[in-house]
Amino acid sequence: MSILVLDACALIALLQNEAGAEIVDDAIQAARAGKAQIRIHQINLLEVYYDAYRRHGRPSADLLLYELAKQPITVIRGMSDAVFLEAGRLKAAGGLSLADAIALAETLVSDGQLLTADHLEFDPVEKRENVRIQWIR
Image (cartoon, rainbow, N blue to C red; front, top):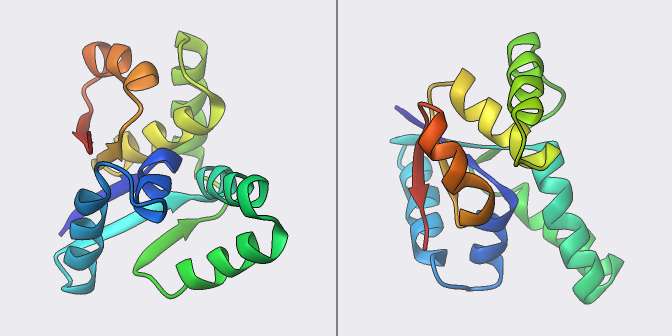
C-alpha cells in the first residue's frame, strides 16, 4: 500500500477546487479503496485550518475540520524521534518552512510520496534529497 503525505497546499487545492484538486481527490479515492494511506501532519492541517478561518471565519473553519475527519486521511499528532530529527536536518539545510520540513520529514521517514503544488519550497529540495514528490500542478 502506498503512503501519500499531503502538505497544506495540496489539501487547500482540493478544498478550493483549484488546479490539481483532481489529483488529490484521486488519492482520496485510492485510500477509500484500500490502495493507499493518506497522511497529513497536524501542523500542516493547522495551515489549512487558519487559511479557512481567515477566509470564512471560525464556524466554517470548524466545519471544515469536522468534514475532514470523515475522510480517509490520517492526521499525525506529535512526531516520532525519527521525524523530529529529520525535520530538524531539513530545516537547518534552509529553504523550507517548519511545516513543510515536517511534511517532508514524514514523507522521507515513511518512504512515502509527498503531494504538493509548492514549487517554491520543494523544487530545490527535490534536487538535493532522495524524495518522491507528486506535483499536483
